[in-house]
Amino acid sequence: MVAVGSLTGVLTGAAATGSAVIGLYIGYHAYRGLRRHGDPAMRYLSVGMIVLFGVTYLVALLGQGLIASHVVGIRYQDSFRLVVRLLQFTGLVLIAYSLRLATDGGVLSR
Image (cartoon, rainbow, N blue to C red):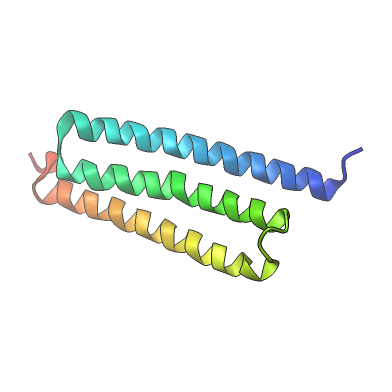
C-alpha cells in the first residue's frame, strides 16, 4: 500500500507536470498568433504566457524533484521558491506590458 505522504507527493508532481504541459501548450498557441499577426504586443503576450504558464511550473517541478530525490538539500527550497515567484512576476509584467502596447497603438485601439 502507498503511504499518504508519498501519494500526495505523486499527485502534486502529476499536477505540476500537467500544469507545465498545458501552460506550454497555451504559450505555443500565443506564439502561433504572434507568427500569424506579427504584432509586437503579441510577442510580449506569448513570451509572458510561456514564462508564466510553462517555465515557472517546470522550474517548480524540477526543484521539487531535486529536493525530493536528495540531489539538492532542503536548504535550497526557498531559493527555488524565490526563482519561481520571480518568474511568475516577470511573466505577469510581460503580459501587462503587452496589454499596454495593444491599447496604445496595437490591435485593440484600431
